[in-house]
Amino acid sequence: MTAAESPADVAPVSPPGKSREPRVWKFIGTSLWGVALFGAMFAGQVAVVAYFLVTSGEPMDTGAMTALLTNGRIISLSVIMGLPAILAMLWLATRLSRTPFADYLALRWPSWRMLATGVASMVLLMVAWEVISRVAGRESSPGFMTDVLKTARADGALWLLVFAFCVAAPIVEEFFARGFLYRGWSESFLRPAGAILLSSAVWTLMHLQYNWFFLAQVFSIGLLLGYLRYRSNSTWLTVILHGLNNLAATIQTIWLANNS
Image (cartoon, rainbow, N blue to C red; front, side, top):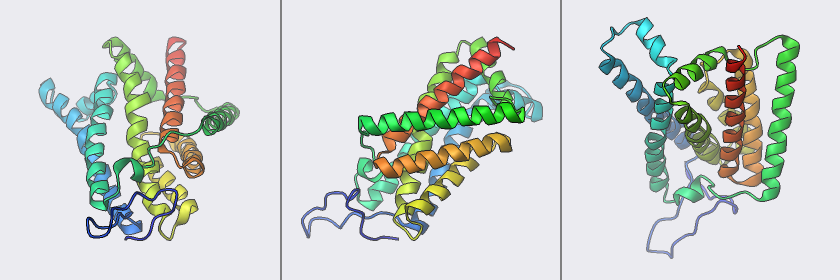
């Protein structure tokens, strides 16, 4: 599970005798840590839903769960609570690898050129999917998102929803998929191409609340973000692009809700 790192990502090595050499978790190590990371994120998110379910005083049935899972304020808090949970687990995984947190996850700022390239690429991809959705007669935004937005606005928590979807969620998902998973898998037998494919598939599986049409869209976005992560060696680039994409989707959903 350990091997020499690539020159672009290698962390400074202390003089011999002072500490062991930094390493990168390879395929098996990254996969096992990935399960632990997802578990930590899931636990943090479920804890919020469980708290509101217990304190609501409502019977624990399907109807109560459905109401909670379409409540914008609760969903927002759930997404936000996944952030400290996964950050703690990421810190532990990188700490045990003896590689600095920022170095392991490629938390370096991209060049303006790469940022412009990324934004242009994302816009083109979203325009293509919008055309496909119109030709296929599909909705442009998942239906349940409109209900989530309406409940958040009714509770005065629209700002919380925007923060959760456009800041917290991109950090959680990009640190996990394009940061940790890509880093380890790309330095295994999968190489960068395999790591992009597999991390995109895992990221898509994290969005099973969508139907097959939107899952295909998510997977294509994952491939683009994975490629940009490879080209830029910057996870912050994918965080920014992910956040901008979610912001555009949120604005679109608000517009559709106001005109429905």
